[in-house]
Image (cartoon, rainbow, N blue to C red):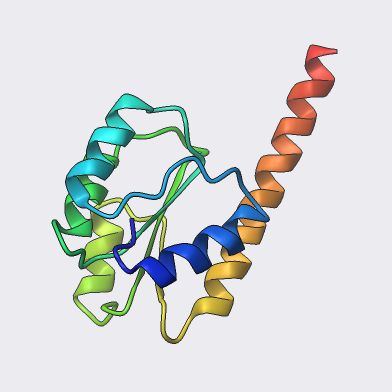
Length: 128
């Protein structure tokens, strides 16, 4: 959930190398509705705190109950305390400052994709 078009495009490109990007949603209400309609249809949600319409904390609260393999990451320019702690308390798996911690964010996403790929491989081996 990112409302800035250029950042949306950059994130989609970067994450598209790691995951199937299934939705890019600019508002909190649309994100909540999409996630409610697709509870198992995602592995990683990237949420900004401040959106043009709505608030990322609303999205966090709405997807706090999810499968253990699903992660919700806050990527925002507003990560100072108490926002960082509040995001984690409301269900964020991790919080990254998009101005200062992009390398850490990408490393986190790569690690999540690796875990997902290994789980998929084990699942396919068991099915065979």
